[in-house]
Image (cartoon, rainbow, N blue to C red; front, side, top):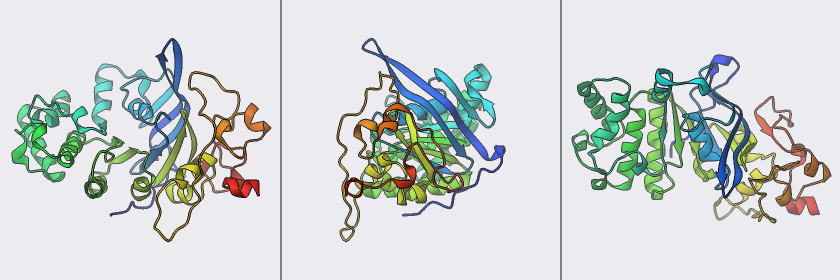
Length: 338
């Protein structure tokens, strides 16, 4: 499998394409408020792939949809290319949605089964004001780019395999020549061999089209190959973020360590599986301290009363930030209890 290139730097403001600033998203459920995003601060640099990982329900997909303004934040800002997108309406919103596109886990979310795939691929182009003939030509072009015969544009989605449908979903996303593509579990429903082909395609397209990716996944093995930086989410917050090699080799948050312990390794590598005890706290309750405290083997009194901010606690010059009071001494349970 092709591997990701080294991460770009973000020493200047113009190197940042996307920024989440204190973003909160709330949903009503059973008469209560679910805090899907509980104050997310996160940067995405131009030309990079940022992997976003965590358990189901941690807020990954909500974060992805916030980037595209499919739902506006209840608090905080989403800044794209220096502009606060929360104020976008009308033409500004249409322009933003051309510059930022999404690839879904299920390609059927973007391919209408009632119509030929040409209609789905051309849709964002026509919405941006492109003429029908030009849009058709661009659709043929992107079908070739993603490895699907352009003569099949007039076929319906059910006539394609799952891998081909995902390629067409990718074609639809890159057709308007976006700068940002948000990928929400784009390979999780595919066979392993097809996954590798799609991941290599995404890397090739990124280099060819100068794309920036936000890659949502629960599969740390896939993220390891694709992403230059990784953000780990837990219960609506980012608890660790940094260079992928640093975070995945030397986690500075107990939750990241627990996630990594579940990743399959070669037979000759022994790794202790960390089984988290306790129950995750309710997303409908405001908690005074660290959200992970009820499941953490390192928890102390300060963790129950004081929420740890996301800071560089490791002397890594910003390469790895952690929201843990004890980030400089995170260790597996056996070492802590010894």
